[in-house]
Image (tube, rainbow, N blue to C red; front, side):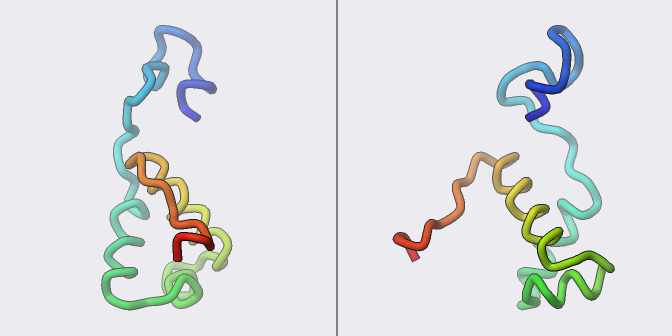
Length: 73
């Protein structure tokens, strides 16, 4: 996404370049590891469950990890 938003030659315009992790990029996996559900994570950090899911999806995309589909589960 950053390569689509940034003009050529600007930071973020190189394919495969990762943005620095945000506080939430580091916090949400810790809370998942602690066994919290998306809903409970949202309540703890004052976000909706859907926003937590979006953060997780964005983090997985940054890492190049594809989420499991329903067929894979």
